[in-house]
Length: 127
Image: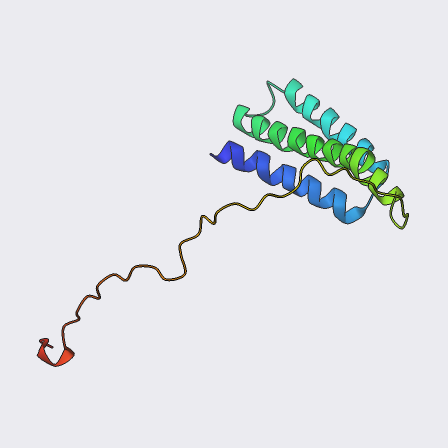
């Protein structure tokens, strides 16, 4: 569970930083730096404890993935949408079928009454 939390927190931090600092080529440079640092940690088998090395690699690789994901999202999804903002265009549609009135599936206006349950008077109840 801690491993998943580490990955999720570093991925969320990467997306938050990328969105907060804005669009730019810096995201890909930072992702490359994180990838390079993660690969360096991968090579440090003898000098670092395994758990610390693994935790660092998880953080750096998730941060790299978040930066690449955000850069790709901004380039492939957000940029085309913002390029069309403020433009007007013609829209046309085709009616494939007309609506047909059917019987209502809702209950009728006067539903059958259920008998009421009688409540016990409060004065006869022990305190």
